[in-house]
Image 1 (tube, rainbow, N blue to C red):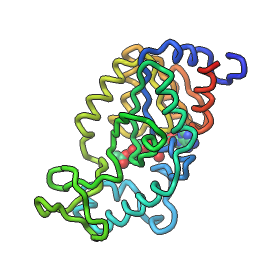
Image 2: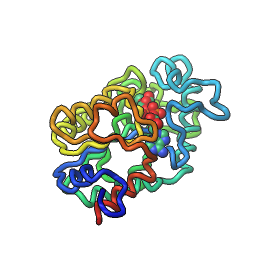
Image 3: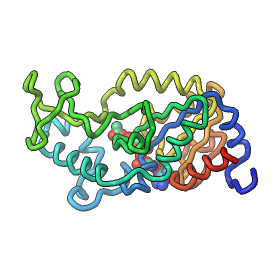
Length: 246
Ligand code: OAD
């Protein structure tokens, strides 16, 4: 270990030498901001629903007003919280390495609000409205129970990727290229259960990158990675940035 640094020396050394660092984040990175992770039980109004049953195109077709109520509630939740030290550390790390690609499965904008730029939004962005018919970006009427596309009259939908839907092509391509090209890949705060995002760490591994996971509950993939740091991202990431500086 480096003096005053509890993280593995070899990981810090790999980050110091890295030409290109690639980071994949999941809901755990926003947990310390107060956003419930995807697989945690929901509180209050929505406790009786399973998020996996609401986040599908079929659920939207069956009851668009219900799905809009859920997403507006989630928009309010994420708009009312702040980025945490983990988000800030990732934005800082981007300034300390030659190239950093940040891929997030989160739809909450917290990386951007912490100062990260060019974030690859793998599962979309909850604050966007899109036409259900053709996916184009629209500005919806926030007062309407179900906002309508002024061009074609279809319902608008939240701009997130639902179960059974394809990842946006540009996000898929850029993430795949970054995973292949990077020399260090960090998988942070994700259960690594949902593909294709969960395959990116393995892709990086197969292409020679050092791969580390940061998660208080090591995932089933951890044994295949070079490092599994069992800890909260809001603590581990600032420490990692600090270790790099000394
Ligand atoms: P999950 O809710 O599946 O997993 C969150 C992970 O964060 C778990 O492994 C926790 O152990 C970990 N975690 C909790 N607190 C943490 C902390 N403070 N620091 C670091 N890690 C922490 O969320 P995701 O893996 O992001 O997709 O879920 C992936 C996708 O599944 C989501 O983007 C969503 C969902 O289906 C879509 O909606 C398409």
